[in-house]
Length: 482
Image 1 (cartoon, rainbow, N blue to C red):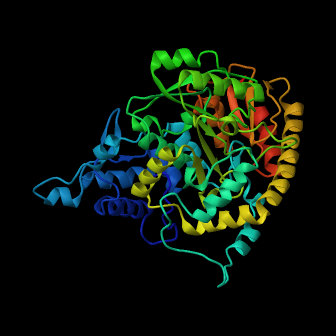
Image 2: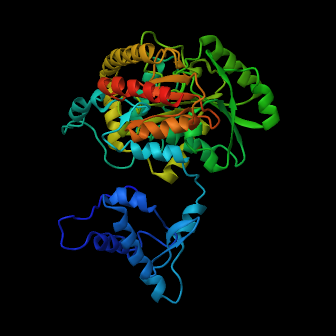
Image 3: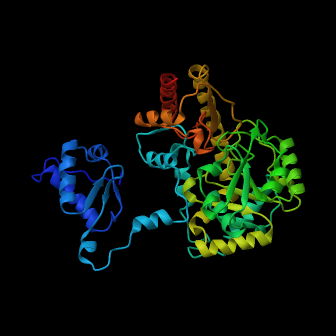
């Protein structure tokens, strides 16, 4: 309701309160606002419709007189009736109760606020984890999709595991990372998030426990929780996830899987050392706990390539490897892959066919062309140069304006700087205050509910001008709250 585009016409002969009342009545009578729908507070409606609060009061009084809404102290104003319910012998379905009953957990409130604010073109997005639209290869992508009659393109459904041509190309691409994977052991998916959804649906029992780094990207999405899984965090240090407690936690909590982002971790930007990677593989093999390796940031190194993925040193089929072009080539293509033992891939492919009948054939065609032609590597070279400049530019601003109020590490790749605030200010208050000034932040509580000291800063999305202005203003807001 807070995203309404309609506004009353102030030059109309119809009074403003009547326009608003008629608009809201139409929403109710059409069933768009069902019984139980909460009407925003009067002040919010006044801002939404850009009118005086007294105008809203009159409009709501008319709706209440018609028996369509009702106000109660402590619970606000809600839709209580519509024409259907007034005339029908049986009441209409209570969609509000259905919404509350869905098995998929809603995003936490602050993530819903972030998702909504990202649609505002005037927002300075200091936490968004994707490439700036100006850095995406829009022109070349358009040329890639100019298909002539001699090129082979199918617009029909692909086979369950995805385009064979793309899987062969991905197989060759993975060899450059030290991963040996035949096309039969690769499943094309609609991005890394779908990979996690398929794993939760196809491989795990309800009530299973997933181990993960803390803080973790998993806490910002409810993929496993909505499938009835439990998440259990393991602390990190500068080399990555600590391994000494994994065996014990596996035994105590009967953990089913360990999820990790070893390369340019989200949200901390940590790069797991080669020694820690070998230790993690060894510990998990001894504990008989499979690993989900999320490597969607692996190509975004800046000065030097990272250590090989965990999967490159997996000789027992213990690692399920997730890759994607969403963080590099284009988030809109929605193409990624899972690599694992063939029985697992076959199972996940079957689940995928039951849920969406295959990823976009056009997107698969485009990604195959980028990977096989060499354009992808050329593009990555350009992006690494741009990311280095942006990272160094951001670090310079932090050194100048944040040296006395925060600490951070310089990332070796990816998008993120994990900023730790020195004072005990409320990052939720900081988030709200910044949002009112059109600065969008990603507080640490998004990735660990009890983390009130960190911000995830991204140097990849906002323009350089926005980065500078937004960060300087952010430093001022922090000092105001300290």
